[in-house]
Length: 376
Image 1 (cartoon, one colour):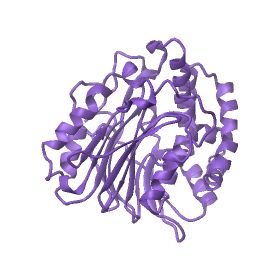
Image 2 (tube, one colour):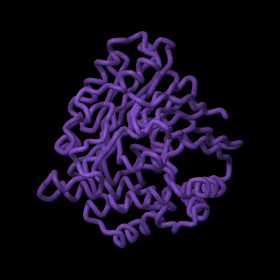
Image 3 (spheres, rainbow, N blue to C red):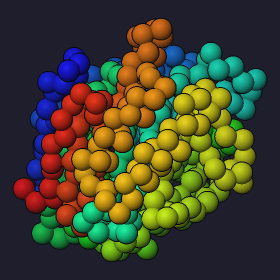
C-alpha cells in the first residue's frame, strides 16, 4: 500500500439552485480550492505565464463563461462567495485546460523544445458495449493521470434536481465540469487530453470543463454530442461519450476539426495522441511517449475477457504496470523534479445501466474502489 491509499474522496450532495450549489461547494471545499489555485499558478509559471498575467487572463474567462453558459457562471459565482476567493481565481480553475494547453500550443507553434513542455497528462480510457460485458451493460472507464499535487483536492459531486437532469461526477475542487460521470438518462463521459500544433489559434471559445458539464446535463444522446462539436475550440481534447442502451462514440477534437471513432469488436480505447490525421501534427507523443502503447495494451488486456468483462477485470486492466512508472497505472517518476511528477490521481469504472461509478482515489494497483450511485 502506498502513501496515497488513505484518502477518501469527499462527496457533495447538491440540489436545484445553481448559486446555492456553488455556495456549498465553495464553503465545504475552500481549503482544497485554494490548494488547486496555488498548484495551477505554479504550473502556469512553469509554462512562462507569471501570476499576474495568469490572473489577468482568468479575468477574461469570466465573461466568456457567462456568455456561453449563464447557469455555470452563476454556480461559479457561488463557489467564489462560499470559498471567499476572487471570482477570477475560480474562473482560472474552470478555464485551466485552455490556459494550460494554450501554452502547449504556443510552444508547439514555435521551435519545439520538449524540455520546456510540462508532460503531465497521460489518461487512458475505454468503452465497452454490452456484447463484451458479463452483465450486458455498457461500461466506460479511465485512469486520470495528472499533476500529483491535485490528488487530495478532488471531489465527487451528486446533483439531484426537481427540474433538470440528475448527475454524478468526479472533479477537481473549484471546477464545476465533471470530467468523468454519468447522468440519470444513462449518458456517461470519460476523456483524454490531446495536443496539436493548432492549439491556441482560436481564442475564448467555450471552455473544456463547461463542455463536460453540458454533456452530463443532457437528457438525450444526440444532445450530449452537441457541446463537443457545435462550436470551435481553443485546444484539443478527446471525449468518450456512451449511453446505457449500447452506444459509444469517441470524438477527437482539435480547435477547428472533429473526427468520430466507434468501437471495434464492441470495444474502444484511447490515450493521448490523435489517430486521425486531419487534426494536423499530434504532439503529445513527442513529450509523453507512453501514449503510444497505453491504449493498445489496454485494449489487449480487456479483449482477453471479451464477453465476460466485469468491474473487477476492468479494474485489473487499469492497474497494469507495463512501462512503469509511465504505465496505464502511472506512478511518480522520481527522476523528475517534484513539480513535474505525475500519477494516476483516480481510476474509474462507470456502469451506465446502473448509473454508478466505482472510483479509486489514487493508483488502482494499491487503492480500493468505492462505489458511488447517482441516488443518495
